[in-house]
Structures are given as C-alpha cells and as structure tokens.
Image 1 (cartoon, rainbow, N blue to C red):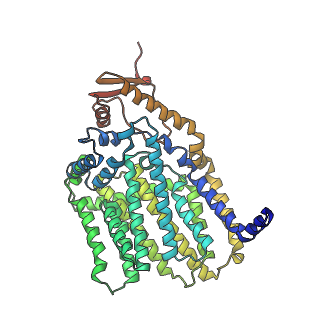
Image 2 (spheres, one colour):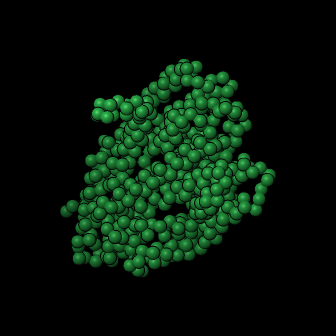
Image 3 (tube, rainbow, N blue to C red):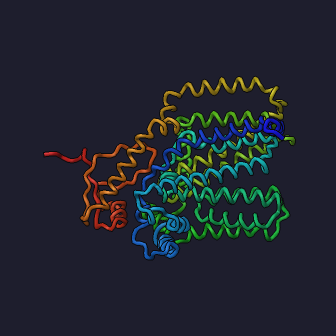
Amino acid sequence: MNAKSMIKNIYNVVSWKRVIIVACFVLAYVLLLIPYVITIPFSIPGVDDFSMCSNLISSSRVVSAIDRANALYFNFGSAIWISMFLNVLFCPIISYGVESMTYGFTMLVIFFLFIIVLNVFYRNLFIFEIRIENTLCREMMVFFATAIPFLGTFYPEVFYWYDGSHYAWFMSFSLLACSCMMKYFHTGRNKYFILLIVWGMLSCMNVPYAVPVSLFYFVMLQRYRGINLHFKDFLPVFFFVCGVLSFVLSPGGQARHDAVGGSAIGMVELVDAGIMTIIGALSRLHTLLVECPCSFALLFLAFLFGIWNKDRVRRSFGSVCCIFIITFLSTMGALYPVMLGYGECVMPNRICFLFDFLFFMMMVLTTFTLGQYLGWICNYGCWDKSKWIMVIAIYMLIVYTSLIAGRWYPESCWAKALFSLAAVKEEHDEWMDIYREIEATDEKNVVIKHERINTTGILNDPQIGEDKEYWVNGAAARFFKKESIRIEWQDDLVTE
C-alpha cells in the first residue's frame, strides 16, 4: 500500500467532524485556563507558609507533618490539621527555599488537579443524575459549569498561596465524594462505597464542606433507596458525623474561635450567624452580578441548552424546585459555619471561593433543568425549532455585555492576566529580592529598606510589613532564622 492510499484510508476512517469538535473543546479549555497558567507560576510564599515551615522538629517530612498537625489540632485550627499534614508533607519551600520557582509550579499542579476533579464531577453529574444523552450537549454543559466560576475573578488566597490551597483540597475531596456516590448508586460496586466514605469523611472534617456532602448523600439515598434502607446505608453517615465531631470537639477549634474574637455560642449567636450568612451571600451576589457578566451569560446559554435537550422523561417543575432548594441549602449551609466561627460578616477571598463554586453549581443545575422543563411545556426538543431562541440569546448577550463592558472588561481575568503580566512578574521579582536580601544578611534583627511594591491584586500578598511584632513578621523571622524582620517602605520614610 502506497502513501497516497494510506492517507486516503485514514481520511475515510477518521471522523473529521469529531476531530474538529475535540479541537474546539481543547482550544476553549486552553483559553479558559490561560489567565491562571501564565500567572500562577509567579506565586509568592508568605503569611502561614513561613509558620508552617519553620522550626520543624525533624528532617523527616512525615514526622514533622505529624507534629504540626498534632499541634494545630490541639492548639489552633481544628479540622485543618489534615490539610496541615498534607501541606508540610509536600511543601516546596522546605526543600527548595522561597526563591525557587518550584513554589509556583506546585501551585500550578494543584490548580490543574482541581480543574480535573471539577470536570470529572460535572461529567458524572450530567451522565448519571441530569442524564444528558447528547454527547456534544453534555460536554458543552461540562465546559460551561467548569468555566463559569473562573471568568470574572481570581482567587489569590486559594490558587496563589500554598497554605490557602487547602480550600481547593477540601473542595476536591467533596467533589470526589459526590462522584463516588453517583458511581456507587449506579454500579453498586464496593470500591466506590469505600471511596465515598473516605472522601466524604475527609470533607466533613472541615464543617463548611460537610453540609453539601451530607445533603448530597441523603438525596441519593432517598432517590435510589427510598424507604428500603439497610444497615450499610448508614455507615457513611456514621463516618461523616465522626468527621464533623473531630472538627467541633477539637481544642484547636475553640482556640481559633477565641482568637478571631468570637464569643460563646448561644441562641443569639446562632441567629446572628444566620443573618450574617444572608447578608454575606447577598453582598457577594451583588459583586458577582457586576464583575462576572460573562458567567451569567453562560448561565443563560445553559438554560437554552436545557430547552434544546429536554429529557426523554418529562421533568416536573417540582424536581426543578427540589434541585434549587437542595443546592441553595448546600450553599448557605456551607457559608453559615464560617459566619458562626468568625462571629461577624466576613467574606475573605478564600470564603468567596467556597461560596462562588457552590452558588454557580446551584445556578447551572437550576437553569439547565428549568430549561428542560420549559422545553416540554413549549414542545421544543430539537435545534431547528429553536433557532429563534438563539437569535434572542445572542441579542440579550450583546445587550447585557454592552451595558457593563466598560467596567467588566478591564477587570476580567483575561484582561488582568494579559495586561498585568509584566506587573505580576515585577511584583514577584521584588519580593524575591527582599527574600534574598534577608537571607544574605548576617544581621539578626533585619531591617529592609525597599520601595513600596505595587500590587496587582492577582498574587497573594505575603503580608510582611513594618511592624516586627506582627505575627507574619515573626513567622518569617523564624523561617529565615532571624530574631526579627522589618520592612521599611521607602515612600513612608522621612528624608532629612
């Protein structure tokens, strides 16, 4: 067979339509991830990274990780002990120091692993529970659901800060637990039952994640077991409760609650936490509406995909309401323990990460299933009959984006990453210069004079400043084996 015949045979065998579709999806994911991929490698060690990696009791990572996890559990931090163990075990700055780019590439690996877990979860959800039979539509919905939280905001306290990455870890544990639940109830295989217990218990060891995981399991039980429950079905619940109790009853949990100014928890505090949860959620929703128009535009497209891909079995309005109520309770239930713990309405970036992903999950599932319901009501089930809806969708998308494009585009992840890349690198390099100067000096009480660093808002701030008594300065001093560290920002100095 000559080369010409081989090429002809390959051309006949290969589905070029499928190749083009796959290429389009690959390009879409590449474009989605570019803002993070080009900026995460410039992540800067700081804040808790120093306290985590200083004064380790042993050269053995495992021994040091156990010691730090034990100290955190009994003294400060409760359930975060499991993330402390993992953090110390894999921390790059223990082996390579703060100047190595290994820190940034470690964060990049964590980011990619999270994206993969998120993608797998949504794929299982749309296959087993929402039951989208059309492969192209299902992959489009997986992409929409994965992309929506990343289009309008960065999460510097999660993906640019090693110690803060445990929020992504616990979210991954939760998604893996839910994926194993779906696999188990559809296949009945014991390996998925064991995995759902393991991942679920790990998730519940951080109470905010216990709420959505437990709710999801109860929903799956009701859907696939009904009233025909067996002893085996209660085993995951037992281990979930054990995970929650390891958080609630830990001495470090109370120590952390006291440290952030929380008072004794009574009925008044419980009610106040509920009010603060509502206020925090509404405040964050307002921010998302302003800063993430592209995310809400994709939600509208998810609604249209629901119309075009109605289920074979008619979806009732009650099932749509149930999906909304369950995901709503999961979102608010995850936020409530945070407000209760802080004792005030606090929404730092890492908590916004938690709220955003659960909120957008709620909206994706609600809008798509609502579209399926309306697809049956209006008898729309194929692409040709719905072309007019596409025209309206494009029109609304243009109008909506045009109204706030002047504010949104300069603040979008794409614009920030591409237009601020040089500034991001400069911010990283400036901090590396400071770290090198600290390491190079023989002084025990280090004073660094440096021009104030312009922050981009993308990277996480190391928070070393002028107050040598500040705990971050103290942690950095212990890490660099100094007695004290102080940075005098040049623009604040009085010249004589």
